[in-house]
Length: 170
Image (cartoon, rainbow, N blue to C red; front, side):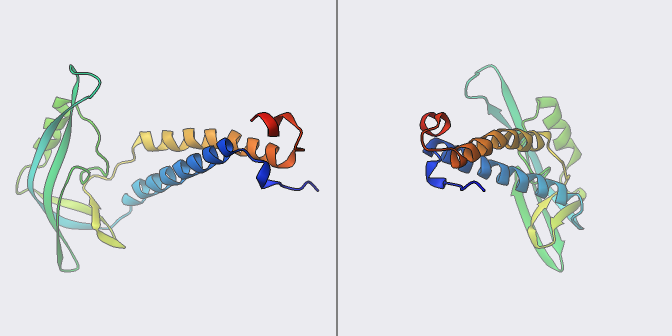
């Protein structure tokens, strides 16, 4: 049986292992929360206001995108919650084109009655339209695919002799 020598693992590999393990953990949590929001209970709510905000890309002065913010009230077990956030519609802040942003603003006029999906363990966390963002799934897959060879390099460094190439040069 081979002995694992953690002290032979280089600082760079440890750093990459910690960084990508954290990234996989955060992406897994985000995907889980997005997926769970589809099954959250709903409460009745009322839209106070909905508006779009123009944002410019820092690297390109010609391109801009829009964010949509919404203000609304909803009640859970007799307690009233007030939300006014850019992430409350879908759970994330996607960049919309002007047409998409205006269509979303038109979908939520002031006074409209809405169904709010809220987290039963934390009713202050809520979304109006549960959405699974493809970006989160892609990030989880990419970070996981990077973490696999990093773990393999750690294994090689831990099980190789001190004089081997993998321990001295990686």
